[in-house]
Image (tube, rainbow, N blue to C red):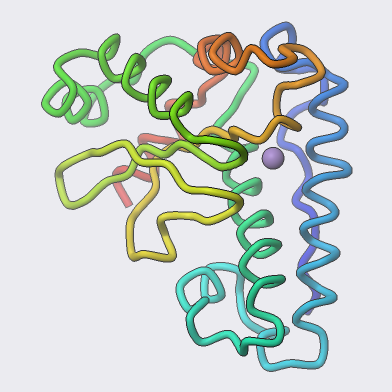
Amino acid sequence: MAFTLPPLPYPYDALEPHIDEATMKLHHGKHHQAYVDKLNAAVASSEWETKSIDEIMLSLDKVPEKIKAAVRNNGGGHYNHSLFWQWMSPNGGGEPTGKVAEAIEAKFGSFAKFKEEFEAAGMSRFGSGWVWLIQDGAELSITTTPYQDCPVSEGKKVLLGNDLWEHAYYLKYQNRRLEYLAAWWNVVNWNRVTELFSQ
Ligand code: MN
């Protein structure tokens, strides 16, 4: 079965003014769609065609050399963006509560400190990539990846991730990545993070 673009769980303008409608339309409708299309083209007529995207992300090292780069880049693009839309919500923002809040405080000292470190990590990634909050047992940590790589491929559990590609922010924020990283907290869906933390 071919991979398909998941519908955006809210209207394109729902994250305004923090993430603008034009960016969301291009990001979901063009960029994510392109990852889906190119992933489908790469796995066509191979055994990878029938695997789930989760299976693919966990076994990239077994993908044949001929299609490995295309599957890694576009499979990662499909996987990461499918999560990314869920990590944002028009009802997002604020602070996490319960176990996630406790884990953040235990690791980073405070929610403010966590945000500072997450933004600093996002700024330190040169070029395109992602910044992640990952869970290793009870402990949390922040990491970044280049391109569309995802820590799940290294056996890590991701709780939250932000897209550092210029296509995620350039229309509204131009070269001001830090401004985008700071504004993004206003739409973060902590309910989804809490669900992932508990799984
Ligand atoms: Mn993107």
